[in-house]
Amino acid sequence: MTLIYQHVLLILFVSIIPFSQSVPLNPDYYKTSCPDFDRIVREEVHEKQSKFVTTAAGTLRLFFHDCMTGGCDASILIGSSSDNKAEKDHEDNISLPGDGFEIISRIKNALELSCPGVVSCADILAASTRNLVVMVGGPHYPVQLGRKDGLISQATRVTGSLPSTEMNGDQMIQYFGDRGFSIQEMVALLGAHTIGFSNCKQFSKRLFNYSAETPTDPALKPAYAEALKNLCANPATNVTMSAFNDVKTPGKFDNQYYKNLPKGLGLLATDNVLVTDPRTRPIVEMYAANETAFYKDFADAMVKMSNFEVKTDGDPGGEVRRRCDAPNSVA
Image (cartoon, rainbow, N blue to C red; front, side, top):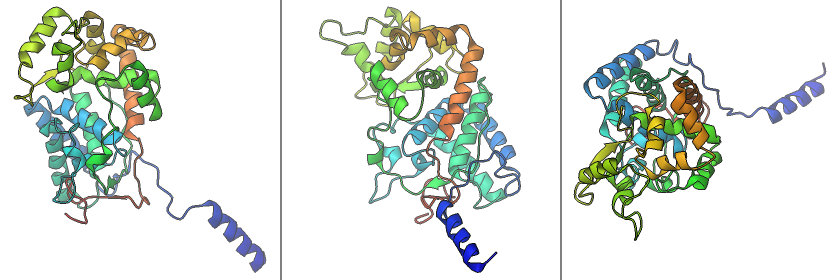
């Protein structure tokens, strides 16, 4: 082979292979670099959830909020500074419970002692969310690893990135569709409300200001609505008051959420949309009747969400943070 021919081949090769090509996620990413990764995550999760039973719900919600704002890169964990208001301090994230943040911090501290500078906060959040779902009765699903932590966390990025509890069916389908999720995947993901809870301000309109003629949403079961009114009687003064999305089995991951919806026990307006919109009602009815089908679809949708706009090796916008609450440039 002549030198000229070799040179032509090299040019062709370089032209089709980018220098900073991202490396795909891998379930065995830490097999050699941090062999205790799985054990540490498992043990810390078990201890935390055993003592604080709302940890699973809080972490699952934290993970969703992180992934939907700039991808699954743990940017939600970064704290604000004197010159930057971070994502976690946006009004849509203020009510995120501290248990979710705390378990990630605990796991990160333990991993830094075992394998410093190796495991990203984004991977900790993804893996701990899965383990917590399983611990409260939900399905096991594979978690790919190798995410890098984002460098940027700005409250302005949150605006418009999270679904509103006032969305109608068209808006909900559009929101999830824009992010690559089908209608069925959307309904499956919203099944996370089986262990979720919501701040009073997210549903108080249904209780007190539904319409001029009907202050309370007639879709709510009357006794349920009265109980919620008592709970949220002073939403302006008691801003932290919350209610479980699944009033029947709030601490157990199951399909009870879907069974509740036709009975007027859906907490949020968007929960009620699922059972009134003809595009989603058949899926609700299927999951209410078949928990196995819900578990499978939820697991598949979580795998898909866990990989949403991730940063990996070779991505200039990612790193492995030394601390989850600050990028390395300021930590």
